[in-house]
Length: 179
Image (cartoon, rainbow, N blue to C red; front, side, top):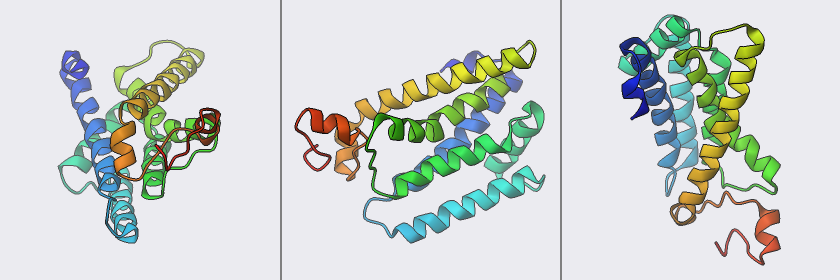
């Protein structure tokens, strides 16, 4: 909804990033009952499509829009890669011993998105201002992902996933299996 208030050029960039992220997440969310090696291969193929787009050879509408967004807003390739590495974690059983471990996952799947958005939305000022904006965007990404995790505890449990840290579950006499 917030994207609809952006100027057309920035809105198009935000939609491109959303589509890129959504498709990557959809690949791994189909993991239930499927051969993980096939999904890994599908994610690798998607990753190759991203690499082709970044090299200026986008194939298809999603990669074409992503290429335009990266070109126009100078979105760094490393945050795209960070997102892909983050969603790839969901191809394995979710297991996070501590909050620090869970935070690393959240940074991959959500802070990367916040970083991308700072480039699209624009940050005026010197490099110190940009660094501060990215830091805050990444912190917001973690907060939003933690909210998502708490909202989806039941749905994730149905998929055999539990993102709640083992140390905290143990404090309350719980386990991932019990959740």
